[in-house]
Image 1 (tube, rainbow, N blue to C red):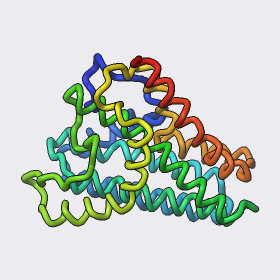
Image 2: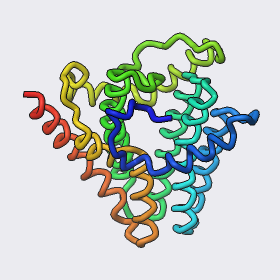
Image 3: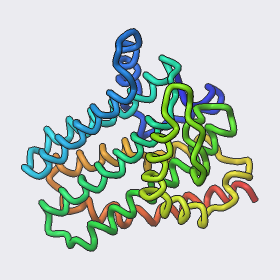
Image 4: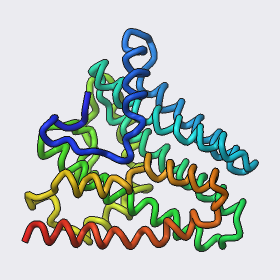
Amino acid sequence: MPKLPEKHQFFDLSDYGRPMGILIAESLKHSTYSPIHITLGFVVSGLIAVGFILYEYYWAALFFLLLKSILDAADGELARIKNTPSYTGRYLDSISDFVLNLLTILAIWHITDNSFFYAIMAFIGLELQGTLYNYYYSILRNRYQGDTTSQVFETKTPMAFKNEEQRTVNMLHHIYTLCYGPYDRIIYSLDKNANTEDRLPNWLMTAVSCFGLGFQLLLIGFFLVLDIKELIIPYFILNTLMIFVFIAIRQMLNR
C-alpha cells in the first residue's frame, strides 16, 4: 500500500526495505500485533546495531541496520493494511529515529579518531538532509492525496484518530517538535516556496531520496564493513552541502 498514488511514485533509494516490510505486515494483518509493536522492534534492532558498532562487529551491525530499515517500513505498512493510522505511531517512529541516529553517530565517534565537535556536526548534517527529503516527500503526499499522517508543517498538534488518546498525541508531538523543530525551520527558511510551486519531478525526488534514512543507514553499514569508518563523519558533514544543490535545482525548475 504505497504512500503515493501510482502516477506520482518515484524510485526511492532509501526505501529498499519496503518489499520485506510489506511481507511482514501482510503476515501480521490478522494478528494482535500493532504497528507500535513493530516500531518497538526497530528500536531494539537499532540499539543492537549500535552495540555491534561499539564492539566493532561490523557485518552484524550492517545486518541490524538493514533490519531496522525493514521494520521501519513494516510498521507503516501494517497501519495501512489494518486501516489504523495514528499520530502516536508517526511521532514515536520519528522520535525513535532521532535518538537512534544520535546514538549511531556517537558510537561511530567512539570507535574513530574524529572529534566530538565533528560528530555533532555530522549528526546535524544527517538530520538536515533527512528533513529536506521528508519536506519534499510530505508536500507530494499531501498534494496528491497520499498518506497524510506526516504533515508538511508540524507546528500544530493534530487531532487524535479514534484509536488513540489525544493526550498521548499531545505529548509525543511536543517531543517531536523539540527534536525536529529546529531542522524544520532551517529547511523551510532555505526553500519557503516548495509547498506552493508545482514542479517536484520524480527524478529529483529519486536524487533527494539519497537523504532518506534508509539510504543513510545503508551507507553507514557499507563504510563500516569496508573498514573506512573514519570517513563516515566527514561524509555526512560534507554531504550537507548537497542540500543547497538540490534546493537550487528545484527552484530553477520552477522559474
